Length: 223
Image (tube, rainbow, N blue to C red; front, side, top):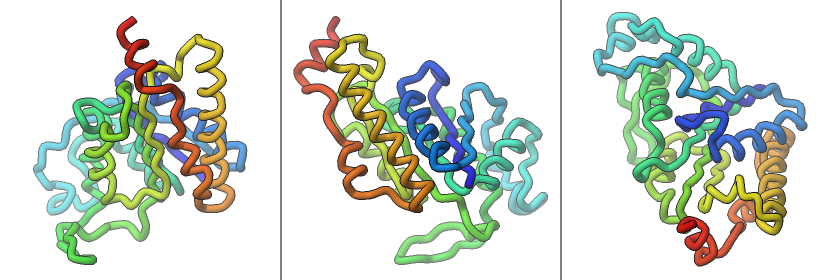
């Protein structure tokens, strides 16, 4: 099994989002998966221009010859892909959105209906299973409302939403212990997904654990 994270954080390896993604991949690897962490900000990905050449002129192929060709191969070779992004103005980052837009060659210009919803016919037999990892620097779960709605379309098998994300790098011993507990849970989610094909409800519940009170976190933000 291959698990690939497409990380949309502009801070790439140094991001709080990556701390979570790395823990997830560590768990997946310990269960026997081949893993890869792709930082989209380092890739040359042209913006989709809506020319639809990939539908009508060169079906399945984009006209732009950039890093997206290799990234598409990684995407299609994966059994599980993870969309990872911090919250930027309510939604995923531009880097991740740009990548997602360039996946349009995987569709055909034929509308299909399912449960009252219309989408474009898929060109491939099966998409990889999807995981969503998102991190936000503010407290509260409402920060993820837009991202949750956006990724409904890919029917994610696992969603990991982490508020108060700045404390993932805290040097306070009490908080570091709580962060370690949380990241261990993230690792177990990656392990279970690869080993069992799903994540237990107990782990999903623990992924929502509070790392710090809202009042204490707001005080930290003012320092």
